[in-house]
Image 1 (cartoon, rainbow, N blue to C red):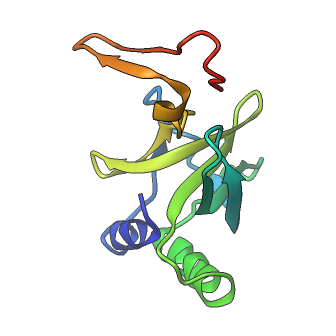
Image 2 (cartoon, rainbow, N blue to C red):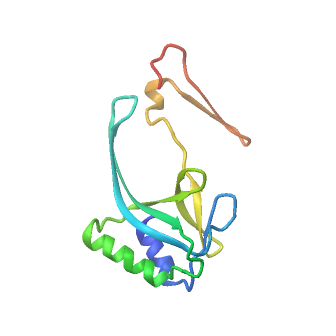
Length: 150
C-alpha cells in the first residue's frame, strides 16, 4: 500500500484497527512513534543496481491502555512527514514488535488495516539459472548446481 492509499482510507475512517497476519488485532492502544523514509541502495546477486524507498511506520505498545490513535491524528503525522522528509508516494512498511521487531506490508481488508507478511526473493533469477515452476498448490524454485546462484 502507498501513502496515498492510506491517506484516503484514513479520511474515510472513524477509528483505526490494525490486524496481524494471523487475524489477531494489535492492541487498540498502539502508538505510531515514528515515520521514516528508508532508502535501500543495493546490488543484487546478478550485479544489477536497485534503489528502493519506503515509508516505515514504527508501532509501539505502551501501558497507557486508554490511548487511541485517531485517523485524523495519523493524517497529521503523515502530513508532517511529507512536509519535512518526503512528499513521494512511497510504499508503506510497518514495524511491529512481538518476540522481535517484525516488518510488514500494509493492506486494507474489511475496513481494517491488515499487516501483510513480506518475503525475500532473488531479483536475478534468469542469471542464476533459477527456474520457477508454478502449480495450484505451491511454487517450487530450483537452482542449477555450480551456476553461481545466490
